[in-house]
Length: 310
Image (cartoon, rainbow, N blue to C red):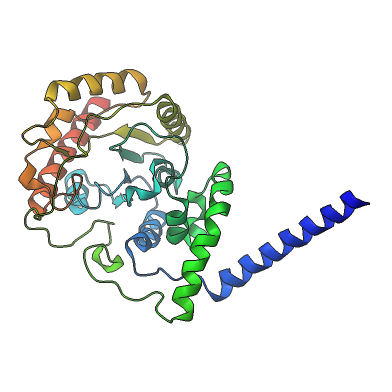
């Protein structure tokens, strides 16, 4: 009898939580429609709208702050979608973009700067801020991520309620991280003429390659191959400043990466060791000139890969 009462109590709690979620889903969410993360809504809309083969750039913010997608599109004659998003949500969240609207002939270009993670969403609360009540974004959450998302929901909800009650949610943000600073391709179009004074490179290091990461990307490669698409790994921009790791270490890193991955690594990472003045406000974000240079490197990598494949 006691166990039955406990069961009924838990069922009631679950029902109340579901009702609370539905109420918030309809009445309170969303509250973050104008921030950096909301750019994903537009990126997904573009990605889903393209029928036929395309180039999809997947990774963290080194992509929107380091690529001129129109140049790639014009050089290769294929539509381009820059799905790069803030690295705070982590690799596993951003990688789900590779599974949206996959068509035969697609080239998915993965540009990570971190190759070692625990196969979890890095910041579930930030993930909530990103997906809110946008059903089309819920595919970014895997079944195994649900427990962490449930734990993070109360904190996200508290912030939403605060914004809602104070009437300041969905305000138009200013600065380079606002949603309106992204163009139709998904590139950040903020003016970044030169390095900012606060720029520093203490986080620059040769990446470690974890077995968990390798296994997941090889599975992603298999998933795309089964659908006639191709996964390739391309380099991220590397700040090569006085005191930076020697290029030989990146050569060793690349050899290890090529040995472990089932998909091709199309870049020479030493080519992407760029002068520090080409970086803007972080060790992964480029100036206008830096983005142009990095884009041309990627175009040549893709051309070489396509020609070799043919």
